[in-house]
Length: 62
Image (tube, rainbow, N blue to C red; front, side, top):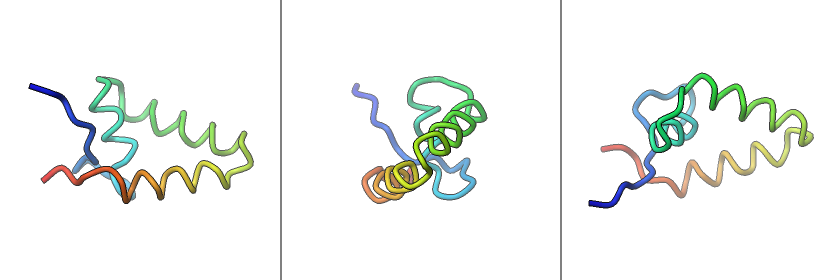
């Protein structure tokens, strides 16, 4: 059985960070903090673009 990365139902905005955390078995809060810090240090714009792209690419957890 293969494991697929999906958006999580434990969502703040779209469930992308929570889906990544569930897939790798990481803490959701740490993934969200890491994403925010990475976005801020990369001048915010690229992080938002990546999030929106993942929002549309990752299937919903239904």
